[in-house]
Image 1: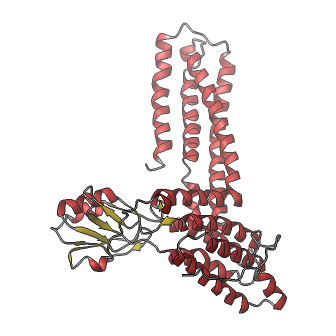
Image 2 (image 1 turned 90 degrees about the vertical axis):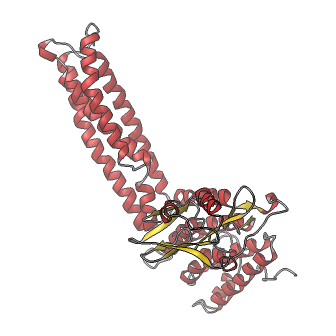
Image 3 (image 1 turned 135 degrees about the horizontal axis):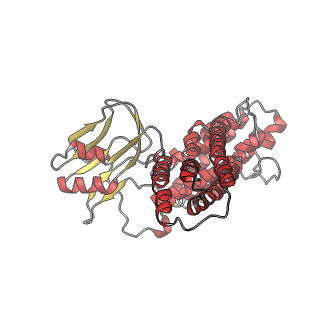
Length: 423
């Protein structure tokens, strides 16, 4: 749902209620009187209406601070994450609804000189005022989410959720688990679909719909572009192998395009955000290696979870077990490169970051049950040692940088030499 519809719904509801409820109350509940003078009621309702406008301005200021702070301190890709917080839009809607209904109730105070105050409407304004104060307090409390620990945890939690939903653990896999062929083994393509339009990012694939379409055509759909790819005019999207042709419009409806990447079906995106935060902290303008170390904590946790799962998830089959969809997925080496390359490159002047990276890689290699993945981590560990040797550190700093420390600088562990597992 478009977020601007949330406050619009509150405006419409408050306007309708403002025109109907006071009239109904005047017609059917006129006998009920509110123990408040006309002047007091007018002062109360006027104060609520004017105060809501000021409160709305404050909320906009809070939203602006959240957006600007997240863009400058963390990553521009986190801006819309904070700006799209639904609680912000619900709060704005309640504030506007309180403003409209207060004005509507004020119009019915001392109606035609009757000297009466609408009891039900005045009580409803008081209830809306209390709700508005509670929502405002909740918004202020949510500023705590701008703390670096909270931001890293939120990104890490989204990454853990995506990994849990997309990949199956090795110990939960069935013995007859099948891996599909590569697109090159599917034979010649009978249909190729290209994208036409402004640049867009593939946010999500409607896998069940694509499988149904391939099943009906008795073919196999092979995605050329992956989730997270930005496609431009003329970019190939997919190819259909075997079977009959599928209406291009139906195929395009199964591919959700947005202006930016999202977390759905994209386990690389949370890693991308964590790396962004880490390398921004390592920039000369900020120079905060401790934040980079905290980001590596979350990165290591995500990689450990990925290491326990089957990453060949780019295949979908129909109810009969026939392969119907093939889509690109990153390999274990892709995840390692994304997670560590930029931090290693920008952190070569920080002993703290090098020590934390070495601890992460050493422990990550030790927990791998797949020999090929463990060997990939050990190769990366050797690459890290080469980076340390060619860094601007002096001899003493190189010795310190080659020691593992989960805190970066705080508790030295004995250095473990990289020993690939026996094959």
